Length: 338
Image 1 (tube, rainbow, N blue to C red):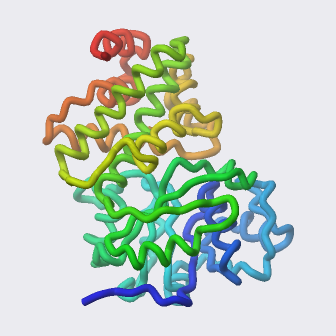
Image 2 (spheres, rainbow, N blue to C red; image 1 turned 180 degrees about the vertical axis):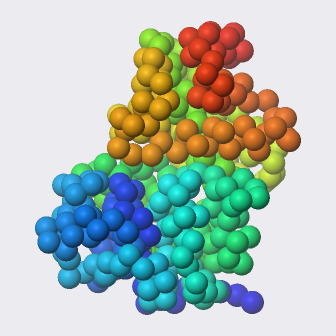
């Protein structure tokens, strides 16, 4: 049975971090109003009283009359058609644990770049909604691409990709996001792109670690080239696709911007590790979640049964979770790069 998004489908955002706030801003370029699931009472109050999220992207101003804010996820899911999830992957099960209404007639869009632990398996967000909530893959999409929330806030020209099994539904989602400063294309490789967005956070951490250790641009170019090779090896080995081109923006572009941008929280996390901060101190100092920290352990566990050659990802895991010396791990890694 086909599923077609209605032309007048309404949209809601679940999550109030920097990316969730940026998505709300983009959607309001086209929508008269949106639903917004926010559990933090301070953020709710600041949006209602001042029109700003006082925790993230504080320069973005909202018209409160166009926001339907609720801390009740069942209210949001019941009243909106397209649900855009933008919470850290590690927190998704907790956020959605109170859901007791059906998702059968909803279209779920993941703006999350991480792996979910469903209590049994380590799976992607799309797989999580499919396995745990019986949402068919044809009713699941991704919004991704080389796009930082901070540049959206500044309305700098950015590019996004809607990833969807059915082009028609993907195009309807894309229309919700297109505006003068956001260009959107529609692609179909849900598995490859979702894993690519998880992996690129690990590799951005590796770039940050190396930067913190004092390595230069010449080394970084080789590191990122090898990282992209690891991405391709992993997704091609686990889910082959004849039409996949990992040198396009959903894959390579996202890796590059996360590795190089001053706005990249994963790179920032890595830089602090490279400079000698402990993992716990970095987690305390950073106001935002670095998905690559969680992804590193998840990918290590997933790959323990697949045995795909991933020396960069392994080095990051050893530094973050095995208390190995960053200096020595990167020195060993440098001999394997080419």
